[in-house]
Image (cartoon, rainbow, N blue to C red; front, side, top):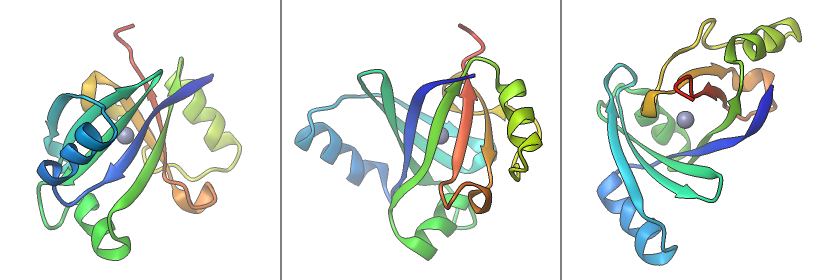
Length: 135
Ligand code: ZN
């Protein structure tokens, strides 16, 4: 079951340039910066109430975030929904005819199990389902 919005992913050219906006203008605090090597991204996290902002910076010109920024510019990249059973929610999406980018959950930032649904099946919103299996 989907329980809440876990985070909003935002593509940025540079974490060093983006973090001060969130900290100085919005008054949030970056509590974690983490590289996810197999996704070619560096991520920075801010907690805001029960959800988070995840800034994504590409570590490679061929990475998906670099490609996204080249095509569409910086901005909102994906919406991540928290699940209490990611396998069941993925299977349900597939049964409903949604195209999956990830057939199986994989490891994301912050130790979450994550899987993406294809934006062509979700009215243009790249959708992530994630579950914290340590909870
Ligand atoms: Zn995400």
